[in-house]
Image (cartoon, rainbow over all chains, first blue to last red; front, side, top):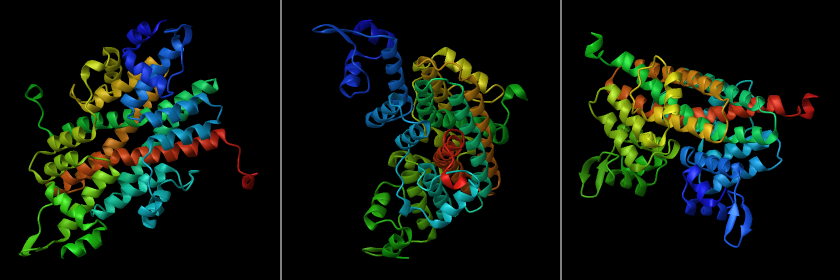
Length: 209
Length: 209
């Protein structure tokens, strides 16, 4: 297809598609003339992936480029996971979290194989420090139940991975699942919060009286 | 305590504390002279809360001000939840999600009391559209398991709320749990991903051979 059709089918402006090409997010088309090139379904899929990562997942262009390169590479899956994880995580300075918080988080993850510099381990410890700092000290059950929920989601992530055969499809689901899993979970949690808080704290609507 | 001690105990620079006061995030101290005021433990706790919301939770100053005002208000808890939810959620234009995606998300949440404009409902639908757009069409199980995980976390949120007696403490945990719950969950999920992917995809380290 030509650029105009690629733009129409993806719903993304031509100028934006050209920006993606300049930023090395999207490969060039097959050149058919001095000002014309042809694009295939792979380009369309890649544009939708870029939109998902940047617009829905909130990645910067630089972070999107890193994870797209990881998809296109031949890196083993654990390394692909690591790149995806670091691209969607704020870097946490390890010196800013207390030993107490790390010990508590490590207790939550007892039996898990997790490296000391996993960005999630440090982020969870920061949350623990914040709770302690503001005097919310009886939240051990909350942390434990979140660890259980995280394991449910991570198992779902890995099972999706297992269900794909080719490396490229596996790598894509690693990246998309890692980036968009945060968005999906936080969205569903907000919906579940509304559901449960309306059950417990609201008067029933008149129609149910 | 004086400003210098407040700064030392919170680990936050005097200039930053004064910025919080100018931005109406932190109440003034009790004035004891033309250039001096005294602060109490409530100020210290509030500074730690502001740090947690902005540094760990990633809220903007404007969003932090909105949720702090909700804590200090006398609003009912469901409204406090709503303010916290909107403050930590990207606004999603409802016209950008497909009816298919909303129908799928509503199926996931069958039986939940969720309003049509819940920000999480729209965000989850965006993720569904992204998956469909890139051709990842067999992910129904992944979505269902995330909904189960979200319900576990939201129940933990609401139980923490129930465990507090006073409205101010309840409102604080609503805000902190909503904001930092995202950070905690995504951190623990990354750790669980590393654990599970290393179990399934890595060769065992030499020490275990």
